[in-house]
View 1 (cartoon, rainbow, N blue to C red):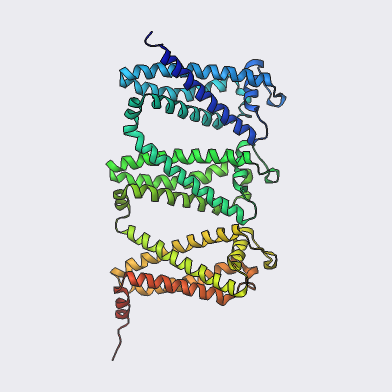
View 2 (cartoon, rainbow, N blue to C red):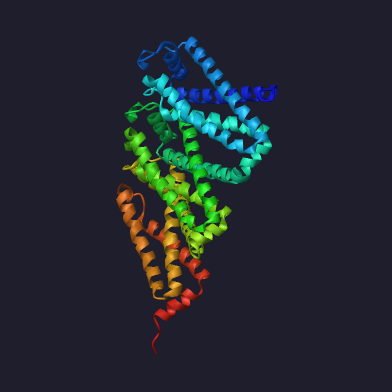
Length: 477
């Protein structure tokens, strides 16, 4: 019994149990997030054993849960043994490895179809993507187990895909962590920590219709965080595949950039579609900023690992962007330090960023009622730094252009003058009620210091600029 020897059977049973346990854990998390533990196995058990037609008539019992769990485990063990047979055959004939990988793809389609046939009346209560995500987790766990026991086969796959998958997973986690950190700051600034993942989780897991119904629970936050992380990892792997292709064909780097642009639009559209009921409570610009920050982090990671591609895409502009970001951060730090010094002198440390954060994130109208909060301070600081970095890049473009056309040096000074006016205009529009609490000359001096620091940085890096500026206005005798 070469094909069905003890090792094959043992590997198949263990792999099947790993897959079954991962699916069970996933659905336990989903059910806990809805406040209905064990509802999914009970629903599927009722559909299989009792022909349940109406999910509302369900009564979750230990018998239904246990009965479905046994069937579920047996099905996964049978699938695991089939996989183990293919793995054993692939040890002798490596070309069969493709059939093994294809089997997992067929498994996804088969399982979704089987649920559609046996429990089609429950598909309103059990969302298709929940089933899909569960089977992806099971497939990943079982594949990891098989390749861990058959390292030669694992190396055959990983030699071509290992770096790509690793890069994609890391990039995806960077993006997911960046978005999560941004929304944590955003929610904390509004005094409602974890509200955004709870709202999105409630919309996806519970079909939430009104935001007033939402209760922030660990289950909702955890469930959405897992789904959010998996989505970013999948996107990261797709990006890594394109990057690997662009290493061989550099022109494809533009397809890689286009993918990020599509990602922004897709994510906004996805939120509007699946979380339409809560979009009124989620600021669209906050979602856009979160995804832009994630994109920036992921792009930085990819281009640090593939410097030649970064050079292909940016060419000489890479230095311009870097210079602009540094200049912007210098300006942001100078403004922050000035406001801190002013607030400390007045005996109210961090009052200015607290007031501005409250105006931006909470629409504050009464400055007297605001209290200093770390969330408001950090949230406004991140937004403040991001805005200065964008302005710094624009200024760096003017500096680069002025190297070729000296007259544009005047445009650089006009840009900084316009920046002063723009900042005052934004404060007037977004924080009109605070203008009595925020002294105008305090804001003006802060921006003057930022402008001076940024210009000094630019002129130190481009010493010919000051000489060309003097040449623009020749002195007449």
